[in-house]
Amino acid sequence: MMGLGYDIPALAMRRPAGSAPTPFSPLALSPSVFFDPSQTGGLFQDAAATLAVTADSQPVGLWQDLSPNGHDLSQAVSAARPTYRTDGTAHWIEADGVDDGLLTAAVFDVKNPVTMVLGYQMLSNSGTARVNIAEISKTSTNGMSVGVRPNIDRLQYYSRMAQQGVSATNVASPSIWGDHEKHVVTVQAVAGHVTARLDGAVVIDTAQNLTTQSVAAQPLRVGLGKVTGSIPGAFRLFGLQVWAAEAALPNATQVSDLEAWLASRMGVSI
Image 1 (cartoon, rainbow, N blue to C red):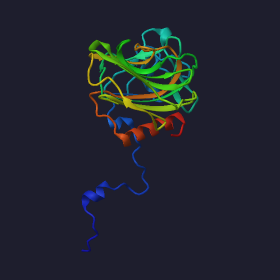
Image 2 (cartoon, one colour):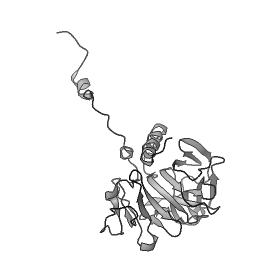
Image 3 (cartoon, rainbow, N blue to C red):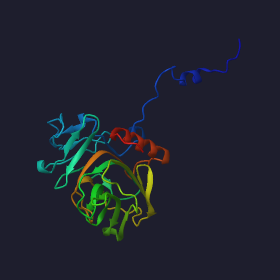
Image 4 (cartoon, one colour):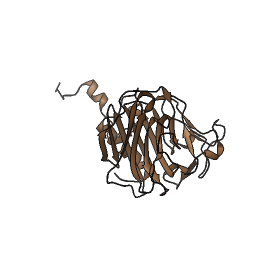
């Protein structure tokens, strides 16, 4: 017989002609938590998950983690629950800038390495301190956060661990401001260094004081934060993914894939 250069394993690995590739999913990279507001089946109006979110402008008392880890975000106080919003295409969770916030159980250590990927849009433009969109914290001086200075929409990163004598690192993007538009952000912090990307461009690349110290398990918070300089602010959150210290952090190629995936859901190009 004529040798055609094929063997059974090679044939088995081939996609049928005309078939589509498997869509990318952040779950393939095993995040510690994965929150996607477009998956409305994971949204509930109450913290006990008895009343589903089914329409625009309903409160969110529970936002289920889509990872297998089950680290859900919740808010027991009804007046402090953010709102599910949609324009029919994009989906987001909206904080009112007064008292809205969500948090997980105390399951994350305040230590490096950590990666956070999120999509946001600042709605408020009042205040020169930091609106902490996502943070892992114990007290005002023991935590790390990704936030935005609302008056100029400037991305900021903060970390400190006073409990173990680690002084504050508080760095902001030097010149690229957000103009209160939709943005995709990735922050990666490793021992002594932090990098932040805004819409695919590196805007922070510097040393930080927090290395590998920790203060034991604490909540992941969205909205109102504890760490120094946190102020309430109105914003939209289009998605949040976190790789905490126990997880394998995404590499550069995977970060680009994650950012593109989130941008497509937000209706922006990066």
